[in-house]
Length: 115
Length: 112
Image (cartoon, rainbow over all chains, first blue to last red; front, side, top):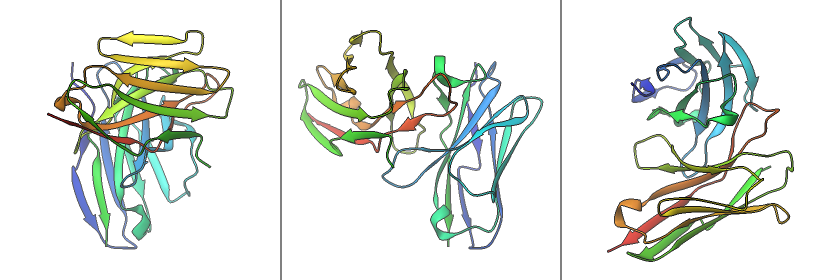
């Protein structure tokens, strides 16, 4: 059973640029959630995807967008990057529409640095 | 507004000692409380979780104590080992929601 895989592991972008982060969910998991973890902080919910549709969103602006594909993999896109977007971006999958009953399986994250 | 408040921010414990991390919440709609363990360069990993219908849950050396009336819960690591050195996050969620609210984390160092 494979876990959650994220790519790339590290990324450096310039302010104003756009970035796409990718995530492959754990086998059998059809729900993907994205979290932003700033240095020294807990993860903050960005949004969740279930059946290829956004299924809830945290307090993040529209320049954070996502996709989920039929194989349950997902992308996180961030436009017009700002310095404060520098963080570890975590993808988490769960086996049902909600992680409520099962918790998450997290990937190792993508470390994004905006300069 | 931080939905889940966690303390202490950092903790140093001798090998064999007990590590205790505390969390508090305000939203009474929360009804699932997991703890996650995160090593440097890795994503958080689910350690143990509890629902408010029980006051304690134990898995190996890890125990969650839950006080519903006080809206507090804590993680106890018995016989702490250097390999337990990591950052620990408490979290909370509710059946009607689709996200987890995480605490700010506790950096645990277990010294030999």
